[in-house]
Image (cartoon, rainbow, N blue to C red; front, side):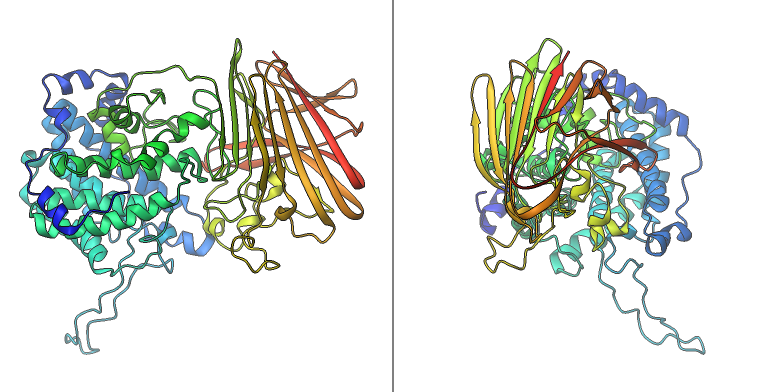
Length: 620
């Protein structure tokens, strides 16, 4: 990304500018208000007018650091944000004075919150508590000692939502409400960022936090600070942080955090970049950067089918990108084919296209023009930076697609999943990834790999002598480049009707019985057959369990393993004639309201040197 000097930024901010120009176009709001999703928002706002606002209880707050559960407190917080942000959008779309009054009450309520930081993101899992300012006899002794601010994702997102809503509804809001918002946003977001008086790892990190937190700082500052000189100082620092964020992507545009976190982090980067473009009068265009363009095309290239993504690591398999983000990216890159498919705004599980908690994704879905729906083309792609192999092939019954993963086991939101793969046909994953488990305190600590979703036990990879893959660093290697438990991609070749890829997975395991392990896939696009060959060199006779994971209940019929989907059947054959054992387990996923049954198909054999071979036949 191009480096901008302070004087360049200052001159750029002396230009004339306007935000949200779409909203000023003739009849735009009237047209936007007739979309089905807008009607649902208006109905939601109408139904909740004057109703009690969810209470934030201390007993729920402390639940996280007593039990590790996040949902009790977060659910109430998210419902507040849903109410605020949906009502604010309804006010903009309709101009109804009742929604303006309700928005003021909701804004005031959020301003009353002791902290905007979620318990899971607080450095010590507690609220900042100042020392007592009184002598025993009740006389004031000293002012409270300032405590470090917890500038987390949710503080940043809340501050941005309040600031933009204040900007959008400016002349319809009370001067006191606006003053309180501006004061709190500077106190909790902008000033700590500029004074570095916050506790966080993210400022110079390459994960999604840098884009979300710094991007929110930059956007809020552009609304609140009209003077070019102080604004230039803030944006200069913000650009340094978002540049660190971009460094976490491969030069081919890949993020190992997957499409869900691509949308979250890169989405905030894009909304910041567009706000910066507008504030600078079009002089600063981060979208012109070649790497940013490659990142923008990432999900289009990795989707297995419309709405279906390879959910390696902590990602969902059903992926429907934000219409607001897709609208913006299609304005910048007209050749982008990524589509946003509208659905219900609020669902019981809150896993819908429109997520009011993430204000800019939500609001731009109404405040930008609706994106065109495109036909997803066939495509084969190898992402060298993370060792991902993708093949997407349209058939008369939908897509026949395959994805396999290399990389290393020290990635952001990592799962121990080297060599794992997905086989997709006609809207279903016949062999799948489990994605994220329920986020609790231990999800990001030393117990992370005790959870099935995160460990290699929950992926389609073998257990070698009972050993799973290992996470993070391998202390046997001194070189930083060699110290990760990793996979080496030996080959990735694409032909018209065939895909071949091979991984060396020897370094994925730390067991002493393993000398060499390679895994090769051959995908035949014409016959809908996937062949897998695992070659082992072991120190002696060792029990190896080949595991395949599916959400579709398998069965054994006439000596053959069958996975019967809604639109097809996958038959699994072992070349060595091994019969499998089938186990099931009920899991919670990252939505606390949903539980699912997953199935593990285990083929066990004792070998020393040689191969275990399998074929997966798909029939419509």
